Image (cartoon, rainbow, N blue to C red; front, side, top):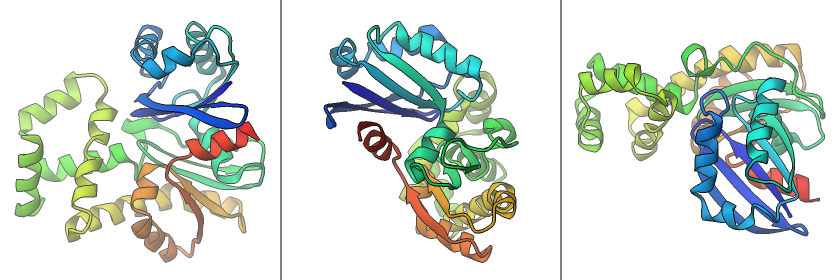
Length: 280
């Protein structure tokens, strides 16, 4: 029995298979080793009945997690998971590696992540190329869910939102300036709080102002991440992975076309491709 995990900072998606057939799946909060210590990760695992029921039967565990970019972080997360999955051989890589496998399998290509966070790299069929991206929700993540949340709250606080959107936002979240600032600057898991406002974008995706914010975010992502990467690797196919890319792919393709970039595939949920890869 094997398990495959793809985790952003917000959510970790699990698929469990036996003899090539999917037998179970679940979603738990993200297991980013930069933000979650051993105690917290074990707490999350021990809360999930699906994982508890299959833990001893899993012999191989493939984990692709945001924040697991260094060998030290990979080893730390593998050690923690080994305390729960006692019979499993565990392989940990970062989410960019997982996205690359999900999008390209063993072929080369440019892989762009737009989920709760953001990243981009050329994949040679074996490894993503090292880059200067992946700076997280404070210094980077342009175009991602947490970036969209940050933009929405900033426009709300600066009273730039149209009146109808302001009312909808207040009705849904009961926000005010002190509450937002306290949540951002004094409480943990800020990136997840920011990402949670993706639901508001989805619910109001046809509003012209929301379309404008989404397009501006994608423009920022493409000019920051994709254009420089494509310039270094011309003629490579471009692939996108992640919830934001999959949810707003119509807007994403329109913005990409303005830069003469053709997107070959958009994979909203890479966990399915990863399971297929590691069970075949």
